[in-house]
Length: 128
Image 1: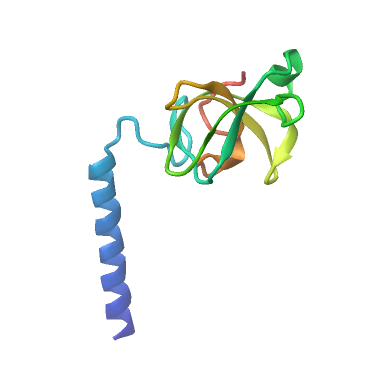
Image 2: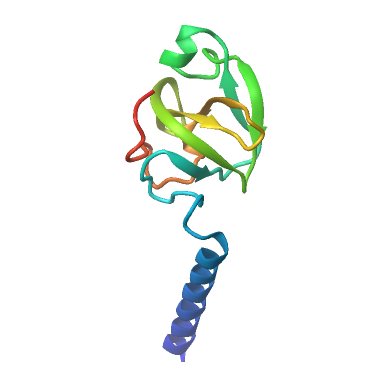
């Protein structure tokens, strides 16, 4: 009986995942494992997209080196990731920051920690 319930639950979960793939499609959907520049989902609320601070912001992104908050993004938003850079500050044990374009047209760095990606470094995305 327990196996039957587990098998049914697994089948239903697979169907839901497959249906989500049909709804979202592959073009423009968030990369789950990182395969280069493109759209990545944001999993948190109120994530700051930062700029300013001159050269220090671009070379060593952090909250102090990039003091100007351009905008905030919240789940289920997606951002276009152009490149990534090791920052002067780690967020959630992730030292990387990503240069993004938001749906509202704002550009800046955000902590890579908040992107839907399986690892800290996003495979296929170049350094800034």
